[in-house]
Image (cartoon, rainbow, N blue to C red; front, side, top):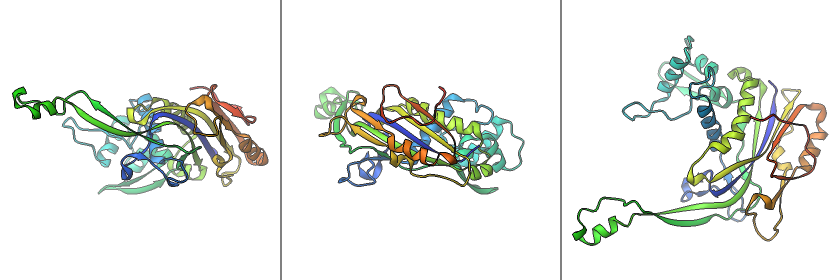
Length: 312
């Protein structure tokens, strides 16, 4: 496999893909209120990919098990790291003596994102060859504070004759939340071929990573996370494993059609990739291959560099 970089653009409507627990579960703001942009952590992006792989390969697919996942015993207790690893070894039929070998051979997310494994019998740490940066919105975003009522009562009413207590119990529960009406994010990532040799990541893992980015964004459904849509994905592969252009996502811009307000829907934005295309052309002697995927509904300014990727 080759070292490379990834730029992924996605949108969200009526929700917040990654909330900040230190700010009343509002959107994360790395740049502050005055800047206006909101952000997504790399953890949330990798969760989308992991969850997609779990759904696509519920039996592990031979070597596509997911280590970082939630699994419980029949009694409802969460499995520990060592127990999760042992489950992968058991289900995959691995005969390896060391757990590091088991997980690098059988677990997709360990090969791709790395691992910190520390139990009594064995301790090791592997840096992931794929590193996602923080994703930032391509425009200022104002979150909205909304409120509603759950009709189902919060507790049983003991006796209607008891008056106020029964009335309050029957009123249900009031909920509050922050939402984002619409936002477009740019997600950067780098792929290091030298580190991949240590974790045993290969080209098939790269393909599943890209597929998981695109389809995992569509499949991750939760009311508070909003409706998400993949819009644009670019994968650049380099000839030299030590070479990297870097910060490709800074070469793309969003052009809102309404200059006096933030965009409210997909048809109100245009993705300007002219700067990105120019940057890639300036380094084409170092590039082995460029592939891209784009939602046909997305308006794009500038010529697309590379070849259109296949569908999943």
